[in-house]
Length: 636
Image (cartoon, rainbow, N blue to C red):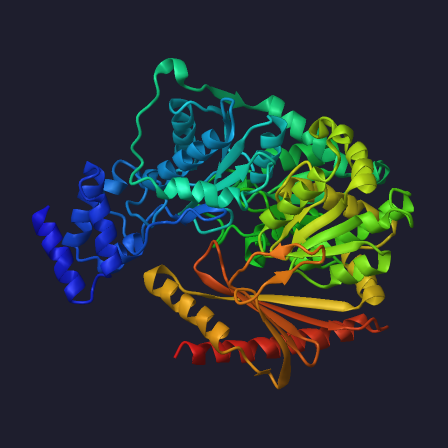
């Protein structure tokens, strides 16, 4: 190893290798034969960029867990091994998703749980269809059992929202799902959940992170056999329980009687078909799947990106919908927490809806229907609310205001919506709450309306929605059920879903949004993103696209409080309001190598909705052109 170390040191001196990369390579040298062989091969190839990407940092266990590359840009011969479809071994590196980082993450969680509970801790573990997801999940289950925790492991790929539900249904202490959501095929991740079924937040997040950071490697010593935990399998019974619960999100099951819509569904090679197809068929829908995309394949071979936010990902579904004359195309991402749709409009054309539009339609339909059914009324509306993220459309605020219900804004990330749900549940007096998780939706709604706050609907612009609190994360499965009811409602009204959207625009105003991003990968990209974020913080704009800046809120530089008076955690996000009514936000992505821009425009309610939509769209395109040019200048 002395020659390798000499070459590494020389590369640092020549400016080819970062000093931090050298320090992290040193951490892994000598820890395993695999690591030594991979590092030696990369050094012999002088693959300095690859070494920097793999070792420029130690992957930090953040408040959501881990996410990163599990297959390198350069795959060494030993990593490829006997693998044909994908490498045999995950990517070696301190900044990569591999057994080194997954092992430390699960051990840190176990150590924290043991410090918090007196009983034998239990963890539910799920995985999606990505490369190494199954391997990582089985490894995590083994570590749990070896270190004295019971593990509940699904018998195959399952969605992230089902993991959230299962944590609550099993009364487990924590949960883990191995997924990188809609990221590219080379990525994977470790998402961590606490006993309430929501992603971990403070103070538990810091407690787990502290335990993870104490570990130098993934190595551990198993407890004596008598002290170990057991691995339990979750399968068909757990699926049936979850599906029965999902049906409770329907407000008007009668809409589905004798009104069979034809829907094309694609799981984009992920987990969604396991629940979505059978539940839609049970509800009376004719479901046609995209055969080429049915297989659970981590290469996602038929799409450039397995992201239902992108029109291209749903194109095969649209082609099939035209062939079979379906009413809608529904697509979910690999871990089925996001849902995108394309619907047939009044002209018979297939129209893509944005996440903001899908969420706003479902929020509007649900609050309207609850008032029509008497579930909400003048006496209890003050205890009902929507919860959304700060970068989600203000159309939902306009709807909430019209119906006199609350609107709560959180930081980006569904974990903050989950945190609100825990707060609302915990606010119910213990003597009234009883075994809350065993109660029906009607029973929990009455409890929340009397003693706490009733969550009507929650969502974020990035195609994540939730209409109940028995799941504590965005739920692509439940979203398909809610959207199916919306389609049936449109049919009852003798119109299309886009017609309903135009009715909402006419009543509440035209609210349109655009999401943009600048992608910068690897160690160099991370540095550029950090510099651009710092530039906005240090030198916020004073005028954008010819409009004066009225306010620029830096959520990392001051304390802000939400509508309930709760402190919003500090985060690297700038929200800018312009004099002409447009707004935009900019923030680094927490899961992908990009900086994200959120653009907002609106017009007051008017008779000519189409003209209003065209005007707002043009104003947003002009805004982005100015922001993109400014970003280029800021990056030099």
